[in-house]
Image (cartoon, rainbow, N blue to C red):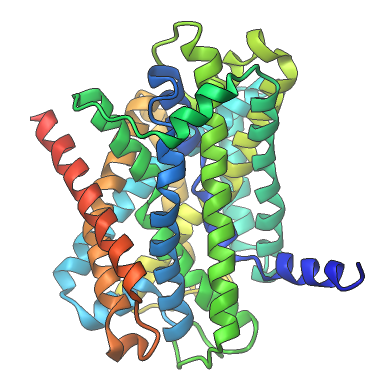
Length: 423
């Protein structure tokens, strides 16, 4: 027993960028997408929560490996080895999608805060925006990562909420294991939204950079993006374990949200939801106020984790593109441009809510933008991950390439169908 406890402590301590990336994937926008999926389609698309796991793992593992081997962020590597036009176009779409995503997340968090406190949505939005900026810019990286890890525990709220509602487990597991496809505009659009909010470009940039941040924190690099770290097989093994755990938890949460919405909203004949907060409120007639409070707390917790990740990934990308100092491990005075991007992206996201754009429309457009941007970015990631000049002997294996190119083709086809359907 004494050997088991230290090994478990070591395992939990080794969790970091992969776990945080996976939980950030379940941001309020993602929650609303999963809830919308269950409300509109019932269990018909729950299989995506299972079958997307290996694709998520393999893409994020490539990003983690690129960061840990090179000691550089993704945008920096793209800038050094590929066309500047590709870099700037990718960053433009990333910033656009992230800003809309931040807006949708902050709006959902403010609505959820209103469900459990007397604060108005406007006041809640101001407080959450200020807290996000403060925690990202002021709190030291070592403490900040610990805060993000604790916030990761809030995803348990969705699992508990799902268990508060009666589930037809036989039908659930049959739908989980048996893919169901319909070639309609609405069905494919929702698959695009599901994949776009699950395999998102901002996660590519974030995990690559966070692996480098960890190397700086553990003295394997003196400065972010400078020098080549000494990486052992053990380091790579820990990174892979961290990534697998993070992606598995991410999709487990998606699974529970979909079945919760299916067994409540869909069963009651609801044809859709306007926001993640509405999903929380809609649970009360079925599972009582406890489930509503749990779901609202889950939205707040994951949002507080996800918004800094969204803004941070934009900061890393722009800082690397224009060669300015970057890194959450640096103080504001040492990386003013990097932190300025994070502050502006967060404020811009908050201001999106002032425009009174329909939250679900905002969600779908951001998810669609993520889905469309993901395929070409994954092509670049695959090229980097197979480039011996960049990764030496740590390039992709056969399985990674098969899974990687398969998801590129699948998301490319789904994205093209979605674009075509709009016109």
